[in-house]
Image (tube, rainbow, N blue to C red; front, side, top):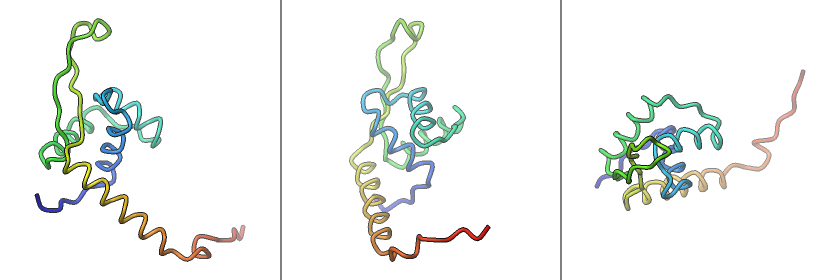
Length: 113
């Protein structure tokens, strides 16, 4: 698979799915995005993003068994594929490399107010 760009929201969704593990279904993903990244994500936006990440080959999903808590409805559990794990590792490596090249003084500033 050729290298595919991942947007910032897609990156957050991939990271959230890694955090949640076997509990990575849409409602938990939405809650975790709010708790960890302080991002309020509409359910529709999440559905579109999850579908796009599956189409790119970064996610796979399967329907889990029905539960009493969900009124007998099944939930779709998401998991990163090998390609998804690879792309998220590349993003991490690139960001770390860039952060490590910033001179210490470059982030210091004085407030002149």
